[in-house]
Image (cartoon, rainbow, N blue to C red; front, side, top):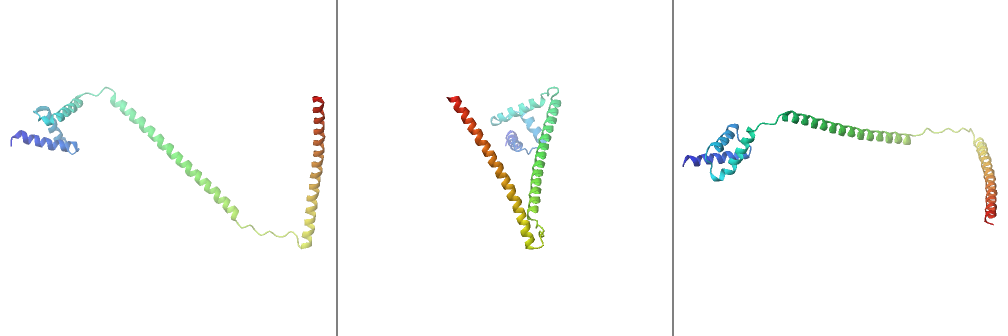
Length: 175
């Protein structure tokens, strides 16, 4: 076999490894040298063009201040990311605090509602004494109810008089 065919086979193998990101630096240099110096078979002309463009890009100088600008942008992005993480953490803590407070209120309310109440002692020694106290309480309630009823009757009478006066005035205006 001619050496050019072996060289092309070797280059094809290196290209396959290159596209799979499996080449070493020495192998990549070998590819660059091959495409820069030698005659290339027709089926590899596209790869030659790509390698020459990559070489041109590697040889091109970077604009002044690019590194500083990129570093500044990266720092700003990092700060924004930290702020977003902090906000997320604060919101999580607020949710947890709200849930904990709700659970505390529910547990306290439940404990209060289901706590056995101490048995109440009777204030009266005998049923007759209880009967007398009940009569007195009902009499006080009846008096308060009667006072309220009298006030309602007085208010009704006043309302009726006002309605009559308004009606009379309205009739005078319409005549």
